[in-house]
Length: 316
Image (tube, rainbow, N blue to C red; front, side, top):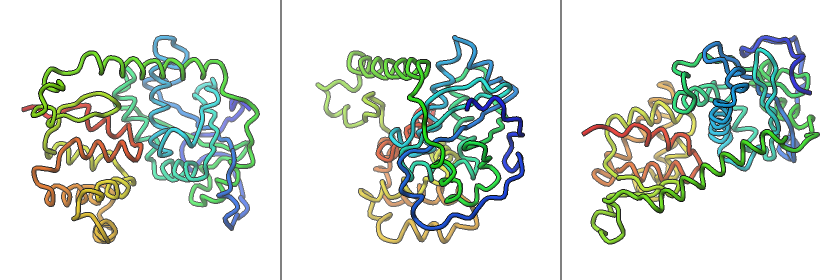
């Protein structure tokens, strides 16, 4: 199936009528493999045109990979099998290999976090993205999952019914190799062109640096701008960050994180994330540093959010 014959609207809740059958029990969590189609569309920039443009295709693929890795919680729970020209949309054929990764993706898709992540990554990576207005649709076979996203078990069941019939195609393999080469090149550069302030022979200066993805960055105290950027971008993953930080922050141990979730539940995810980092900063003082936050994000494989935290360092 290439998705080109799907003539349904892309917004959540639109699409062909469907009366799903209720699925119960834990059998859906025994997911071995299962497939879904994610359809993407925007008017400016036109994602399908970007896919067809050899000069922009790789950057678009990088945006898709970063988005999916953040949305599923890592690199191992899914594969991209093929990119499809489903005019006027771009179709992304996905294979999920872990039920946990699939559930996380479904939840992030239901809440709009997938679209938000895509927009954030596109604004940094894809030239001309700016304020990207996206429309999306998620399908498994003929089933439009947007119609029953609140029933996660049923969505997972439909995905499990669609077994992969292909390996990643040649184009995806080439793009994956290009992305891998870029990562290796960046790692090589980080070994040969480290900032002078972080040379090994100056251990007192080295304490003011940290490593992220084998690159060296200057460390510093968290600022109000960092605080706002974190709360804006972390979404539902703020609890996972808190649990990573609590390993070295006593104020976040025990029931502290659950208490924050309960206390600020009505105020929404932004406020919960903001209060989490406030608690960390208040407790750790001068030791509440960017490197510790980035390390926590890297530990739970939220690489895209970590890159956002490092993308615009505050000016002196």
